[in-house]
Length: 146
Image (cartoon, rainbow, N blue to C red):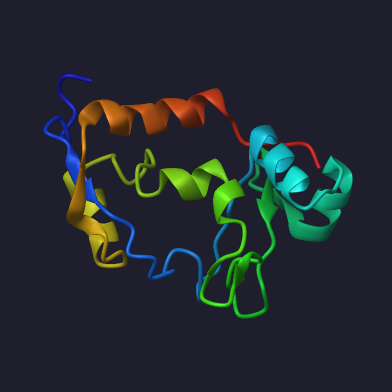
């Protein structure tokens, strides 16, 4: 980790603006752990949860399970001003903005800053904390099974 550009840590506090959850199409890829937690949240079995709330996305070399979106591109779980499954939300949501592609370079981080008012403000996150999010993603790969 020694030569990472964020070796002094980064500031981020979610402002709950919901920009990352609404108005633009995107994927929320799920791991098996995410699927289990969300299925349990709704008292559904795995297959019933996937049938009701997910879609399979063909990325060419791989397929992934993603949450579906509402017609206006809001996350299926965005309701009444916020996340209706906040305590069971997927790792992808919990780890934002500490994603590999955002942490790739200072320029990538700054590009996201234009979309996310929580970037570079608020709580300081140590490089170890940031790395723990990256490690969590590697340990919890996206599900390919529908």
